[in-house]
Image (spheres, one colour):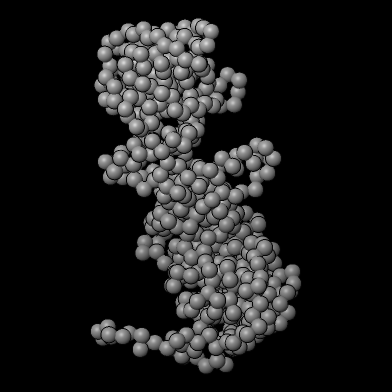
Length: 567
């Protein structure tokens, strides 16, 4: 059938069959995490074009245990011998505090096979499901509501007789989970009726509650509707203290995370899902132990054979990255304030613009936060220089360097790598030692000047300097006067080149925090008729000499940029 001009006429508005005018969840706040169940190895695996091999499943299971999951749904044991054998491996290798969960439809023969796979388990959860919506009952199973209810009770009673009432398996700590499949498309009253009957057949207690998984098997409405359905169930199921409400939100409309969060506000206790949303339309992000997130990503991508999207929450490579200049500047200022806060008060409360959580808490390095391309402003490049060279550039130098970075990024047609930004900074402002100089194209081509030695004497009102400047081809002796060594050296260059060289900006700070730290000086000058500020940087054990080296490097910039000519 060809697509209709207006395909919307084929569909009826979704009817939740529920009016909850006194809903309470909108005024509530999440204050604690739920119980988490990973279904990566079951629901996740069945969604993959190329399912996991047994070695991949074992590696995945090991990682889930390592990051802290205590409930893991591992397989559909009755589906194949491979799933059965893998379940047995999990039973034999699971820590004593991890519950192995398995899934079965409401078919007695498959339930028996499923429970057989769990023999010897320390902790185990048997999960059975039965579709309850009108659509599935009539189209798929051809069952009446009464037949559906009877089947649910029959299969629950069978599970009970084979598990917690079976003295041969009394060494296993048994839990039971029932799913009214397609719950979100089921009449709330009927779903409640089925679950009440199942609960009575199982006989839960406050200490060992029954788990009711209320799935959005197909996401058909907005998250607030799902939250209403969960609140209705939570408020009306009898003996609520003996019930654990579990969520299994699918992601057909891209709202699974929102649905899970709102449904927790509505009363749910447990959430089922897959890491990074790689399930059968299932998408949640269990915040368990992601301090080594890179290793989690490695396992997920290797076993699922699906890459994590670069912008995936928490796990994507770009999720904490900022390319925008204004964002980078705000983050840079935020880190400076935060470091001052921790140092001065010991308060580690996190509050940084654009970063609601510390990237290190999800296994990210600070170097990955700010990345530089042609959109980036002064904050991004200066952040990288600060983190790698410990140079806290003054604002004017930040602006000057950002122009060079932007031109370089545009020329390359891509973002710049950290090393490229560092090398660019060293070349533009002559910040290098001899090893650097031998490795850079700019310095290899340029006969640049270096301060060899100098003497400063005090006259009545000024400081007089005699400075020896050397390059690969020249040895210069220049003389000048000023109210300090730096202004005297600037005057000496003015005398030598025959143009005015005025110091407009001077900043300094130490590198590192110990008494043996070097100092860095930043100098901004105007040379002759040139209106722009020329910047130079100098590093030395002596703070005065660092400033004087910076003056020499401003002259090197002027020579390179042909503002002045070396005689």
